[in-house]
Length: 239
Image 1 (tube, rainbow, N blue to C red):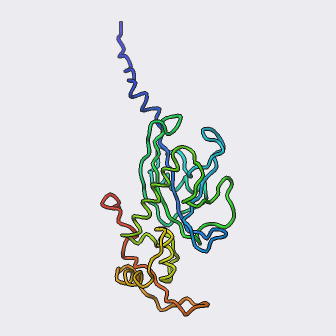
Image 2: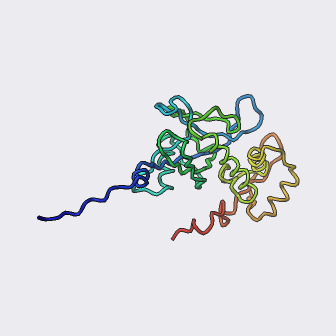
Image 3: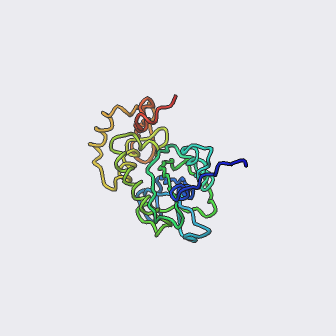
């Protein structure tokens, strides 16, 4: 009689691992003047869920990770598919995997991104609306926690990198740059001290052009492109 090898029976742990799904979501920030407000606010797009769980609630744009794509590619793809946006800056934020964060076992790899206001397409996208990041409604899953963590990262990183450039045009005045910092940090900055700090930072290059208007002409600056937008460490090295 010919013997055949018995197929191994998956363990409970292996079966559970097979049931875990990986999603990719993105918190993407820009600046916008809100109706009735003189200043700008940090805003982000949210997508209304059309099915359970949490049908009808707002959630971060995202989707499932395909087996043949990288995490960065999945973040860019799912963001474009849900919102039509292509950010000027994209960085992995954190992995959220609490057991009870979803009815099924889902681990979310979350990215945070920046997009310049003039890069936001005109017109609305179905089931997508922009919200003030500091006054969000109750979101699906643990997305309020995720946005809070992304805001914390943004506020910390703006102090030691040129991350603000991800929210500015290629050329800008110092007043426009200061407004970005004030909006992100949520506080007023002394104009003279701010000018001294940024002019001695080595990241700005003055141009020969000026912004004209109702006030005296203001010199336009640009960022030194030889300085990275933000240091992502040795793991970001690409061949």
